[in-house]
Image 1: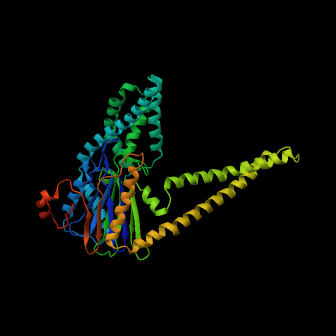
Image 2 (image 1 turned 180 degrees about the vertical axis):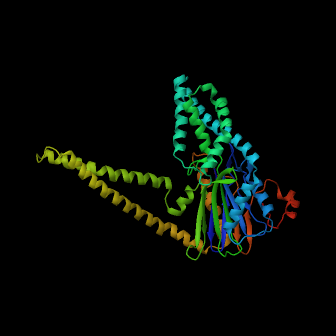
Image 3 (image 1 turned 30 degrees about the vertical axis):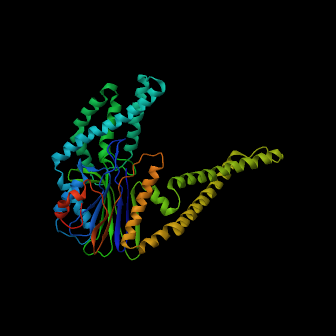
Length: 439
């Protein structure tokens, strides 16, 4: 994981990113680059998160190849840079390369499911000292069916047509069947589970899986100014590959500064500390409070009616309240509770908006470039510090890279790490395509 942020006002864009990255489920490195110059001549930058590779190629390589391909070409709007970059991705990977990549990726998906089975198997073995064939089959069935049930209700990636999905299925059927036999052969699983494993593998690539970890998904943020734009903007996409001449995009949106919207603060990846800073409350704590308040309001009608019924029975006024009347009474009170809950939610939301969010946004609108950069760096540092003093894995950390993009000055590094000693490599800076140590 990682923590990154983009802050914009009318004058400039500030980007900040940590250097942490996970290559396996346990090993975390703190030397990854996530911010890049996208154009040698235009005020446009790029930031990536989640997976450090795209189609098996490091993002750094892909972005630098695109930058060389772009050359001195400029576009009127930032959206055109985004579209051109995506076209480059589609054209760069040949059909032969795509087939090889997905064959390797299929093995990784099937091994990922197998590793989950082995993890649960290990837990039971440590607890009981042994595991029966029946228990093993139960674990295997639960893991496969859980993944299958989740993926089966997801829609096809909007970038792909039904024909693309069928082509993917036909093209890799033999590979999937062969690797199911190799990886799960010892379990002697049923044809039904084999079929579900097949569908899981296909869906992992062709379905649109939002708000869930994706083994191959990368996020790409392109930001800056088009030639005819006086205010900055950004385009944000998540994608997991190229197939059949199409970029498999999962999410895609953009945001622009204008006369009505003077500032934007947009965190990416791990953003709970930025949310806490902006709203004045931890998002997880808020979710728990909302859940408790809702439970309280919806359990109250029945408890209230039970008390009324008990008191009336004790005083001999009734023997009991008929079930249909009780149900009608509870239903009406639940309706009132729902209305009151939504009112309170809006009051809390309005309070956060007026007393926290708007105050920060109003200040950001007026921040100069150096203060914008300092704010971006501070918010990433806050997230990193939180990870260090908690029991969670240090998935945010390492040096923080910071850059600012403005219409006049272009892409400027404020803080930037190197994998080498700059004092020993002066030629690198002398031969750089510009004098800003561009990556």
